[in-house]
Image 1 (cartoon, rainbow, N blue to C red):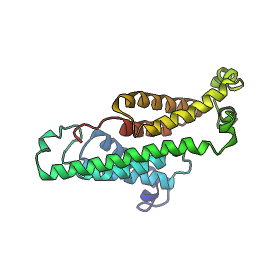
Image 2: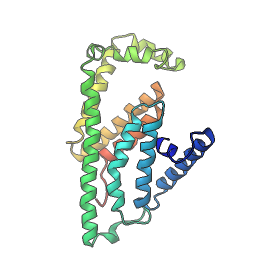
Image 3: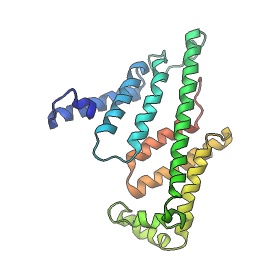
Image 4: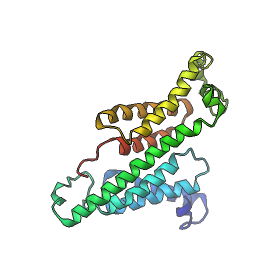
Length: 230
């Protein structure tokens, strides 16, 4: 951890201790205790991983940005536990201000996630293999980054047939639809959420990007679900 490394010697033992401290902090954050405190610590750990990890898959950048945008929400959250009902705090001017802050920040988060999908879709159209529908064949057949052997033998009949173009173009179309989720009515958001989960679940299974999928699941939940009491 880059930030942790500023506090401990550059030694495996101390860095391992810092790692376990980070894990404990994240477990406390997930428990919902004191959002005002854990929200900042959550971002700090996401920032540390993004700036120090050797192997990154893009998910760490998303986590860093989204946890940063959530800091104003957590700082204005008056609850001791985020599982506690916030209704009893709704009648003060301070609660009204906190509500405005939360609405603005959730708006920024939703805009940020929509841009991720917009860029992911549009950037593909500058690559010939995405335009001609063969990109999935090349990516999934790569001996180092592609499909595991036990999956590849089942996928090869599709990858070597015209159907590969359907799935290649289908990926970009789905990403464009996920971008349009920013403007979609509520009735369309659940199907988009499920579609996004399926997309990232398949990417995790086929390419082994497990952490990326988990982070994008969280991003999709923030993006496409209604936030109660906000």
